[in-house]
Length: 85
Image (cartoon, rainbow, N blue to C red):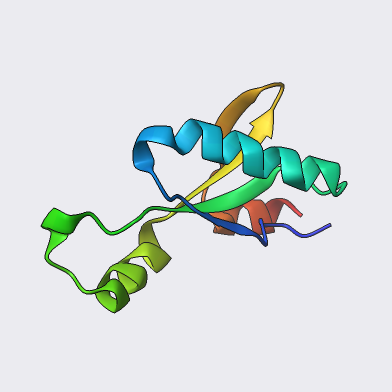
């Protein structure tokens, strides 16, 4: 088992993020994988950034979550997860 999530979900519609995240977690569980993943948010039109700039920013600011008993939990920093393994 890996110490950190290896899959990423790109949210299409932030207003529907919970449904998108639950569907993605279910697909992982159906594939017998752990339901944890990185969440990447779309570039808001007001940011003034290009797609590439926004993606570069996302590398350092994404959320990583895990679905446990029907609730999403934000994971601690990866350094903590890796140290615990």
